[in-house]
Image 1: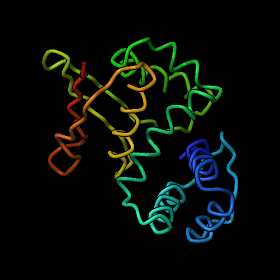
Image 2: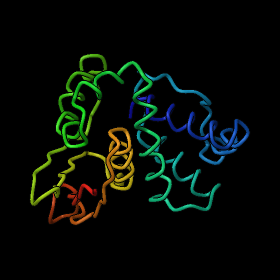
Image 3: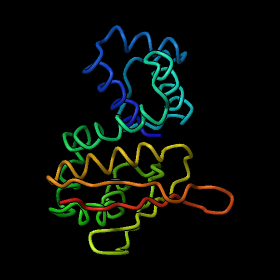
Image 4: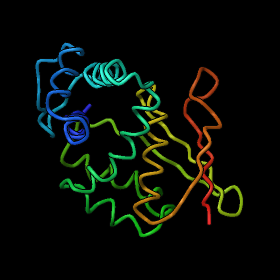
Length: 182
């Protein structure tokens, strides 16, 4: 995973719980690094270890931690050097979801070892969409739910999200039913 993700976790914890909490989480995760190079690649085990340590420290589930971080991630990424790419994708929630793969393709020019997820959105009813989420990484569906809510908030839209298909031996990806609410 790229350091930008781990650095986002650090920033989120420090902003919301302080530097001492971040140090305690790093200690629980057996991580010596207190700050991450955004453009460097790190073993995914570090990220999962941080999430586990946050769960232990806060007594939240991994799903809760990832959901909250997914919502936070939108603003964090928007403030980064790649933030303009997200806004260029479009003005509405659906346009931004449709532009995520193109945004990741552009980021790959700067971060060639990135293994980004892929998103495919299809309209299945009035204001209702199925979002197909493909990723090499397991266990990040709750992050995607938070990310979706964060993207909707950025475009002043409200959504409901239902995780209708989980990645498994029977399915190579997750599917989320997203409904735009009035």
